[in-house]
Amino acid sequence: MSEPPFDDLYRELILDHYRRPRNHGPLAAPTVQAEGVNPVCGDEIHLDLAIDNGVIADLGFWGQGCSISQSSASMLTERLKGRPLAEAEEVAGKVRSMLVEGASPDPSLGDLEALEGVAKLPVRVKCALLAWNVLLEALRQAKAAAQEEHHG
Amino acid sequence: MLDVRRIRQDFPILRQQVNGRPLVYLDNAATTQKPRQVIEALVRYYETSNANIHRGIHTLATRATEQYEDARRKVARFIGARGPEEVVFTRNATEAINLVARAWGDEHIGEGDEIVLTLMEHHSNIVPWQLLARRKGATLRYAGITDDGKLDLDELRRLIGPQTKLVAVTHMSNVLGTINPVADIAEMAHRAGALLLVDGAQSVPHLPVDVQALGADFLAFSAHKMLGPTGVGVLWARAELLEAMPPFLGGGDMIAVVRPESSTWAELPHKFEAGTPNIADVIAFGAAVDYLEGIGMSNVRRHEEELTELALERLRRVAGVRIFGPSSASERGGVVSFAMEAAHPHDVATIADGHGVAIRAGHHCAQLLMRALGVPATSRASFSIYNDVDDIEALVEALEGVNRVFGEGRERTAVR
Ligand SMILES: Cc1ncc(COP(=O)(O)O)c(C=O)c1O
Image (tube, rainbow over all chains, first blue to last red; front, side):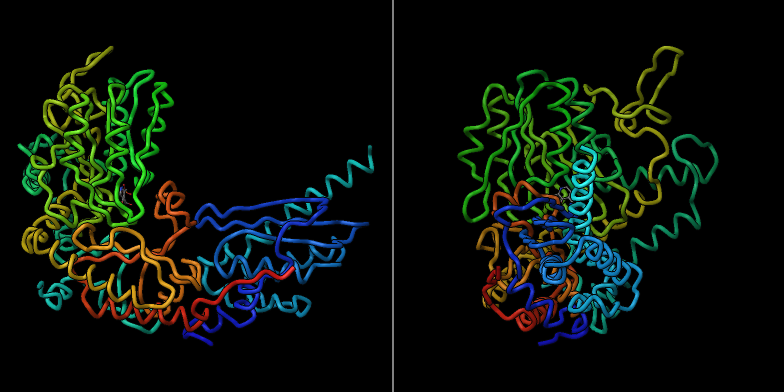
């Protein structure tokens, strides 16, 4: 059900991911872990990745916060499960352009397109971005670890 | 009952639409709106009297000084101070508390001393004491809250002991609305030989407050939460205490004689007002005090208590709403914090905003209290003299909108 004037914000897909978060909970054997807190509102996202051969074989998230931060994280996990690291970085960049620059959503974003309405509410953009910032931190760690292995 | 229709006409900002609906402003605990009389005082000062004060002979300087000191006299009378010299203007309540922590605290707090606070304090009545405790090797103790959101007075009594040098409590919680029995707490503190600082940021704007009856040693509050402009706060303390305290900031206006190595201090309250103060806003603050006195603080309190009672009753009937704090309006000010089962406070505030209803969501600068309540954040509606029954109905309608969007009471289930 929509509630004007925010039917554009609270799309059914967002509410669905909020109520039934996908890939929820820590992994048994993560290779990378990252977390982030939004100090202004206290929203919190933890992200586990199991990376195998440059591919995100599995991932899990948990945390607390509003529907936007939690559904964004849930959609992130669904979109990136089984995808190569390079693609994860690319998707994160496209989500950021959509949310921060108001770019129209790239077709490759899939369900994540539902977050488009958030761009119109500057105070809520940081909610949607939280999971993606945590992902970038996880990817940085993964890269550093890979490099160490390479040199070590 | 207040004539809210007439009062509303004094507040130009309320005459607007937000997201296509009439603005319903229910974030008064954060800051109140300003009546025309205050805005005009500000403009009038700049158009007719602007000059620097306390240091001019010319007509404008004299006029500005008179108006500034007149505002001080109004504030002193408003809170029942013995004289205007007991009223120090600061930037806000936060700065007033920091002034005490520095000027009084640095002299009187030492290693092993204890400062007793409560878990319902605003960060501005916590962090200055943490900084002081760290400088001096002192210890902070916190009294908790009861299940119905009142201060745990038994615990407070137990915590106050021979090591206690200062007790610092809020008169009224900005989250729970709880009104604390300050006079009783003053007795506890004084019996132990400690002083009492009262954070009046929420009480002075909404309750009749008389510093003689309060029994406190320090009282801090902010003009912007009581219809006045931003940028002005007040520290009240008994003159003897202020006399004995060293200055807070050094500079112009706060000195008597300056010699190369040292100086002597100006008389009270100027010793604590270094540099050019916020002259225009202090004068406009005087107009806000006039406005509140015109209505009468007991009328303000009665009106807000009635609204709070109605709000508690109406919100209790909205599905999935859980209200924090005392159940009776007589024990709380016009602040109602709540959680909704279906939606996070930020989503509640966004949807309310879609209805034109301004409420606050978050930790309200009270993270210790959020932890004690076991929630990351709450939604909060807070009232002022220009709010009425219709505003509460608009809030209820907005919260029903939240339930429509999120589906009332729907469980969240994780999918792995
Ligand atoms: C109880 C309480 N104390 C202190 C403050 C701090 O007021 P200010 O930010 O004006 O210094 C506030 C307001 O936010 C408050 O509600």
